Length: 199
Image 1 (cartoon, helix red, strand yellow):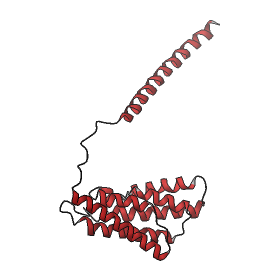
Image 2 (image 1 turned 90 degrees about the vertical axis):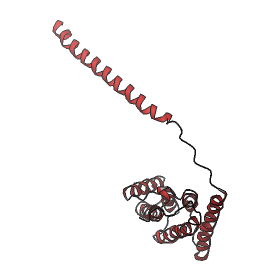
Image 3 (image 1 turned 180 degrees about the horizontal axis):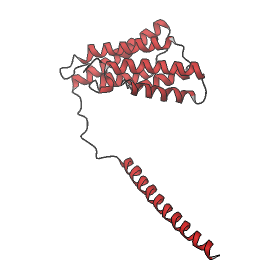
Image 4 (image 1 turned 180 degrees about the vertical axis):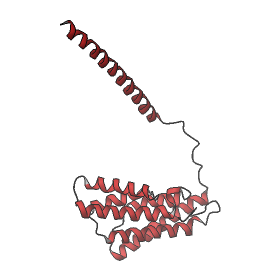
């Protein structure tokens, strides 16, 4: 009986030490993980645009979306809502890296291709819209063409069970239209230069 007690005692102390160490690790990870959620001190606010820049932002957005709407109406295509978000980026914050032509055109086009491929392989299920959107995000990150509205482009492709032509029209053509109007309108402002880079 004493031999059994001698054997159990080291095992108990080993388990106790292991549990204490594990507890410390969990507490450290919780504190580290949770502390990230409080954010950082807010930086300076974005400057208010001048009256000219506000007018040009409105004009670019209006012309870009009306051109896409007319194009879609003429060819009896759907108007994809993600182009509205692209308009905010291209005409509202044209200096942003995610607003540049490479990101707009490749981001939308690759996302459309991923969405179409997802629906062709898996069909429309309860989980395929999430898969298509998540895959589109990874493809944009890997190709350095991240454009947030691309996620909506992929999601719409799956939800509407888009055909392969969706990649070319309305998506590729629509993205090019937005970029062309962005180049023409944004550069009317002396404070703007669009694009900052093409590729």
